[in-house]
Length: 85
Picture 1 (cartoon, rainbow, N blue to C red):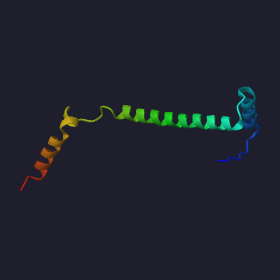
Picture 2 (tube, rainbow, N blue to C red):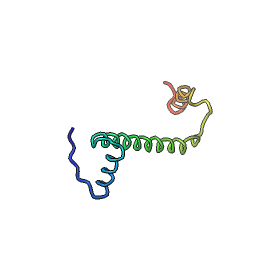
Picture 3 (cartoon, helix red, strand yellow):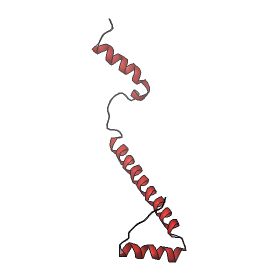
Picture 4 (cartoon, rainbow, N blue to C red):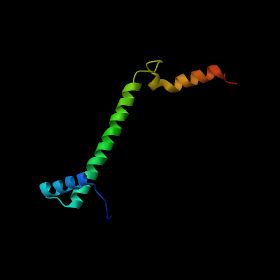
């Protein structure tokens, strides 16, 4: 893919600085920048998920073995509300 971009003065100076001080081509700098940006977004999403899990952990109530025996509990609850025929 070919990219054409307009940079403001500050961004242009930063781009030229990277080219001169790293010896990388424009293509290499753009590729590396994209990789870093994607990683940053993935890290932010992971951190948000971890915060959500931390907020939700332990807020439920019920039997301690619910995750192991949920079918029995569900069947019992349904039978209480709708007794078999």
